[in-house]
Length: 331
Image (cartoon, rainbow, N blue to C red; front, side, top):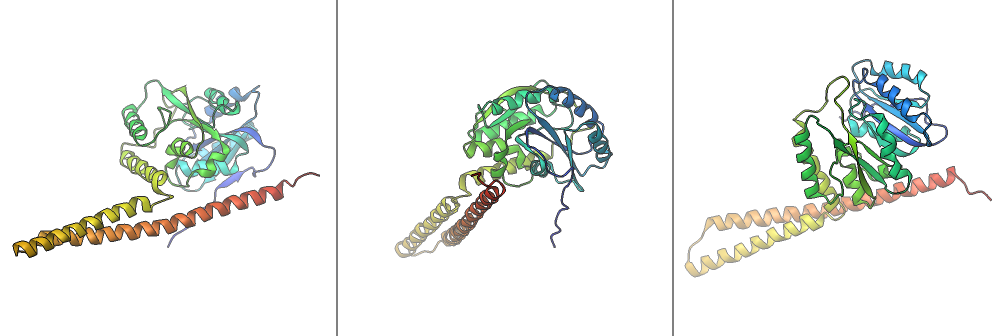
């Protein structure tokens, strides 16, 4: 039996005027970091020519993060809070923040102060100026897991054609980019790849990286295999999700053809030499059966892809219809 995840709790309700920039901050056990983060954010936003808000999503914290947020909200009017009762991961936290944010530009920023809020205006400037749809930071300085990060980025550049060197960093992006991102665990790491595949422009700026102010990293070396599998999953999604028969059908047809040719060779050996060669028979069976399974899998994939396309069009229609009713044309 599948149990639905509890809905996110938000305070205050999503209402009021839009702002220019919403900073989305996933927070898991960050009670010690949040007061200084908000203090630095307030200093950065003071007198800024654009309007900002900070949406902090408490992702199932076991410390006093939620209580600290309630206190901070009384001091900082630009702070909005949301809460997951259980830990659901950064991707879900960013999704919750997006659903409750009012900004036309969104920024993914961690709460651990490895990135200072003072760099947020530089990150959003190219987007506000219309020069880019998405901007990622290129980490500068010495930091833990630098080797893992280099391997991850090199593998990503080998699989995907993206014009940036650092995919796993802070990011700013237009709100509409969230509409094309699949709601999948950990796929926030591939925002840049997916946005670029959908035609959004991507750029990069250097951003200093500092030691954590307090607490410890939530990610260990055990995340590497998961990251590699996610990378392959994203690659498959972008290359074959719309036409899965291109992969499974061609692979199935090739195996089936190999089985048929092997069968012809086995028959010729039997007729001409008068002997049977059982390994050839086994190869024929394996190729024909496996090829048929791949081909049928490709056909099923095509049907699923068609349903996904129809669902995407339905969502677009509903969004346009609801938007038109919410903002009727003035005579």
